[in-house]
Length: 208
Ligand SMILES: [Zn+2]
Ligand SMILES: [Zn+2]
Image 1 (tube, rainbow, N blue to C red):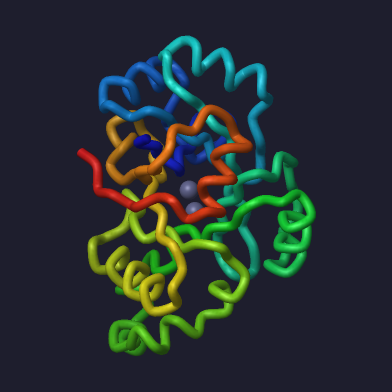
Image 2 (cartoon, rainbow, N blue to C red):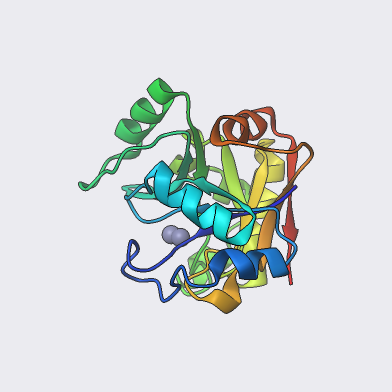
């Protein structure tokens, strides 16, 4: 089951230029079986998601992308808006209570521009980032990142023995599906999505 786990739509994510018009149809054209709407700090209502799913005859799931003191975290199975900045500890506590799942989003975004020290960072050093102590998985394929930034995330996930997810982080329609997560089983609802994530039955794959 091919799912793009990381998509931002307008107007719920103010940075996005991706309207709902045609989104689920485009996902279908790309042979995706599902998409996850992961707006910044805001969760979709189940009714709106249902409407979008019907329109494109595709599964639509809700997630969320929270900004913490340790970077952006994709969260599944936790359906609350959070307006204030949370520390990673606070977020983890909330998500654990809800039985949810946390993924470090684009952990090495911009690592080439951090300067020479970061460029020479070894995988061992990269593994010591605090954020990795709190997450269940690492996004190893993000459509907005350069290949070497994704590669570093992949190496870190392998070294730490943590599963890796893929998602486009689309903010425009032509970005949808350029990274995705392929699940082994069919996923019919959000509960099953969290179950399959927790079971680790998935692989990150580069899309179109
Ligand atoms: Zn982000
Ligand atoms: Zn994002």
